[in-house]
Image 1 (cartoon, rainbow, N blue to C red):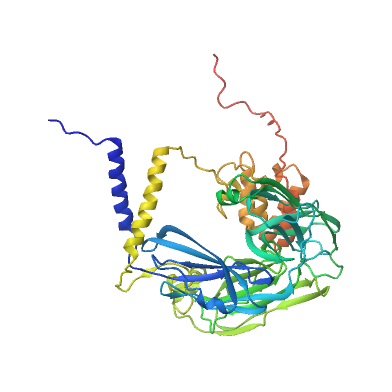
Image 2 (cartoon, rainbow, N blue to C red; image 1 turned 135 degrees about the horizontal axis):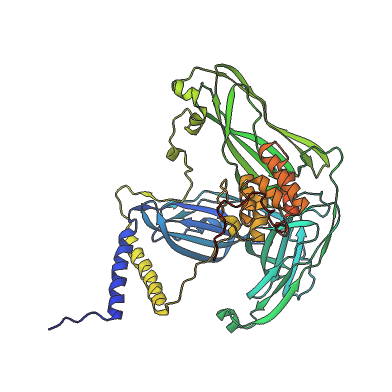
Length: 583
């Protein structure tokens, strides 16, 4: 008698069982939970709310204990989002808990450490300004739905980074919609970070505020008009619409257009031109001693108020006689505080002495313009000096400073030991298995399998999304093939990418790709674009002004590269090597 083969449904169930076993086997049952917390905003006004985020890798029982918050905050809403992802020791479940907090008083408040699944978060600070929130600048809209646009400076200097905040106020649920802020003529406008959402009470009405932040950089002095932001969407007016999240009434709101008067750079301003609110320089770490051929490191930090990464000059140490300096890539941390941008730059420099004796590092200096006091200032670091001792790694290290710079500092710490310790990666448990992990693993496996069954039944074709071509080119590598023009990606690259990456992408946009920068300049048809590429080359290799180079690239390539029209190749005076054959 022949043996019956399982039907397709049975084969699908068998595959699901096998996949469930593999999934459960892949979980790290002994992973120890870790937790961290952060706020969506570090400063708010009276009447507003802040969102507390707590992330943990606990399997079960990870709900944070919010009871310590009761002294200073009212807990308005809570939520949780859990996802499964690969970790160092297998699959891990990462849960993010959100809590909407309304401060009970003004001043500097502390979010205490919270317990979550046996771990504790670090305390956080929140500043609550005593002054009530300003009245929204209502324009086109209704009392239940309106908008405002607010700059942090209405009279900025040319090339000054201006924080631009757009807020949508809604006293009813927003079911769907689109918010658009057109860019003005004579300035660049870049969206900064993700949108944030909070609540604000005004005239006894509680509004949900949707806030979007931009970086506005005027490119010329004179009058500049910022167009109004526009929202078009649907809001829920009935309980059914609010519960279902569909339907609703169409609504439109807009903010007023705002004029700005852009001031020219003063005649006595330092060059390169750097308008800021404040700038501080500091040493994060310095070596105690130097030895010939051995690498030691200095870490320099610059904190600027009123600038984004694109406005800041590159951090470079002055040359040191008898010492080779190797710079790591700059680490940038961009934030948006008080309605304007701030950036913190950190860079590590490896020092490799080539001889014994006294060496001196002159302090790094950055000249900048104080836009508040309207005067020039200088941020500087104190000089450092060392007595270089005899090398301990042998002559090979002394004759190969590049290899010595690639090694760790004199302490001998390994790269793994130097890695940051605040990352949310699980560590191996000390033999104790979390008692609820198996239950959580089964639940997550069932959810995953349910999604798999649904997808197999639908049998929907998968379509891979093509990445932005401008972002696909690896930094420092020549583009191997012609890239497809993506203007938003190109603008983002010019604002934030390193100079080698920008040059590589511009070469790859040519058809066929340009072999080098000289060919790129020759094939560009716009003189302004050719001059901008030359400024980029000087900034890369000739000590040119990097900020000015970015500004010229941003203006010249706003609409993409303009190529020369193809020209016929002149006829060669030499006869062909192989005469054409008769047909």
